[in-house]
Structure formats: structure tokens, C-alpha cells
Length: 342
Ligand SMILES: Cc1cc2nc3c(=O)[nH]c(=O)nc-3n(C[C@H](O)[C@H](O)[C@H](O)COP(=O)(O)O)c2cc1C
Figure 1 (cartoon, rainbow, N blue to C red):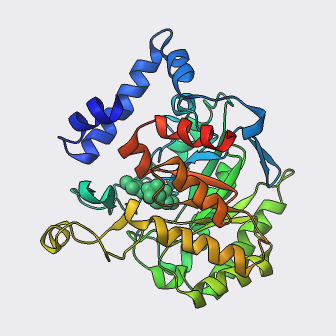
Figure 2: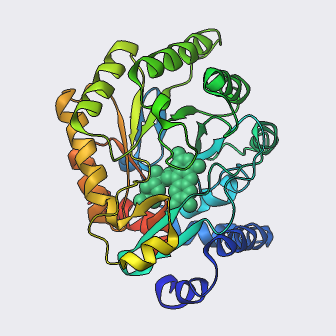
């Protein structure tokens, strides 16, 4: 029904407008008596066989919603009814920011992809906290954190730390997002020495809390082998809890979209089917090189149950979806979970 009826209508309109429209639709529909239970009965599979224990947390199932969909933590309670095992909110920055000028979100229909240069548009830390206070505790919530675009390089760590400390009571795990291609200043966030400093500062803060929260690093799919080796070393040196592979890509190789269309769209991070193999390769490289020394959340181009299984076979412990959720609809989560039970 989604692909035959809902998607063709939604895809007639501007992608960002559709995003907000779908948000309010889900939120408003969920207020009607019986609708939440209807969604649950359609999409949720409860089965002990799907549970996963990872970094001290019990996930109801290994399929999560990737960061960027519920940036301001406004819809996670409702999204829980679509069968996810966990939801990652953010990227949250200390201060609210508008992100890049519109238009900044584009569909590549023939490629089943999206290019975005949203640029961390979000309502800021305090807005996210007030939403997270409404957590009904149905699911594991990840807090994906970043720096404000205007922040000077010497203050990057301060931004991450501010988000980390303030969100600590409200999320179950953290993600240091150092791989968004749309917020500039990436030289520093790709530098191993800087990452060592960032991670150890955040870990120190973590140790000052009574209960420590797992911390993961989200990386780009465009890293070369040398950079990936550095990530493996970094995780070993810092004992970080895991890696999310991957964020969106700046590579445009092999797309069906014409050069003219790509030029018209301009810069941005590519997601969806075109980055599937790239991110799976990164997962496999990290898992092999580290002898599976740390947990990996696999994300990038999961549009079918087989895609998810491929990521898990490559070395991922959990998976996340974003673009696949838009193209394939909410039944994708159930399909993956069903395949896992088989
Ligand atoms: C519109 C859009 C916004 C995104 N925003 C964020 C973000 O704020 N933080 C983040 O870590 N990843 C963000 N992502 C990346 C996704 O979380 C995911 O890593 C990436 O899209 C690859 O997965 P996919 O192919 O299933 O979409 C965004 C992706 C899209 C399409």
C-alpha cells in the first residue's frame, strides 16, 4: 500500500515539506484512539529471538532509525509503533540553528537515493531535552551530538561536551557525529589527534556520572584504508564503545542521475541504495581489521531485508535505516525482523 499509493503522492511534493507533513500526520493520527495499537499490530514484532545485548543495553530488535529523521526528538514515542528496536535523535547542537538555505534535500528517484545538505538544522539542546522528558520509555534512545556551524575550531570539544553533559540523563547511548559532509571544517574532525582529544574529554565527563553511557563514533563511508586503520587504532587506544558506519557520502560515482541533474543539485551527502556497498565495505574492513574488537552499527542503503542481513554478515551488530524508510515505507522494519527470525 505504501509503495503503490502513499509514496507516489508524497513524491509529487518538495521532499522537505513532505518530511514535515509526514511528521505532523503521524503525530496527529497517533492521537486518535486505536491508531497507535493499529500501527503496532501492523508493524511491531515482539519476539525474544530478536533481542540483542550490546554495550550493556538490551535492544528489543536490532533495527533502528538512523539520526537525522527525528532531529529534535519530537516523534520518537510515535515512531516506536513502527517496529524499531531503537531510535537515534539528533544531530543536536548546543544552540538552535537553521541549517543551510533551502532547497537542501533532493530525491534521486532512479537511484533510490537522497542528497541532502541540511547542515544540522535543529532546535538546539534545550528543546531536545524538553522533548526527551516526555519519553515513555518504550525504546532505547540514542543521542547523536555535534557542534554548531558557527563554532570556532578551538571550541568544537566544548560544543560536544555541552551536549553530552546535558543529554546524559535522557538518552541511553551517545554518538559523536564527526562525519556530516554539510557543516564544514572537516579537516579537524578527521584528524586522529583531535579525535583522541575529543573522545578522551567526553569519556572523562562520562566517568563523572554515576552511570556511564556507551559512546560511539559515526564515520563517513568515504574514508580510505589508511583512515580506517586510524579509526581501528583510535577505538583500541580509547576503548570507545563502538562505531556507526556510515554517514552520507560525497562520492557521486555510478549514479543513474544525469550529470546535469547532479550539477543542479550541488553539494550534499548522498544516502540510500547508491551507498549500500560502500558502507558495507567499511563495516567489513573495520570488523576484519580489528578482529571484531568493537560493536558496529551498520547503516547506509538498507532497502530490503537482504541488505540488512548483508550488513550483519559483514560485521554489524545492529543496523539502522533512513532513506530505505522513505522509499520502502514502514513495512521495511518488519520485513527485516521477520527475515532475522528465519
Ligand atoms: C535528510 C537526511 C538528514 C540526515 N541528518 C543526519 C544527522 O543530523 N546526523 C547524522 O548523524 N546523520 C544524518 N543523516 C545520515 C543518516 O543517519 C544515515 O547515516 C545515512 O543517511 C545513511 O543511511 P541511509 O542510506 O539508510 O539513509 C541524514 C540523512 C538524511 C537523508
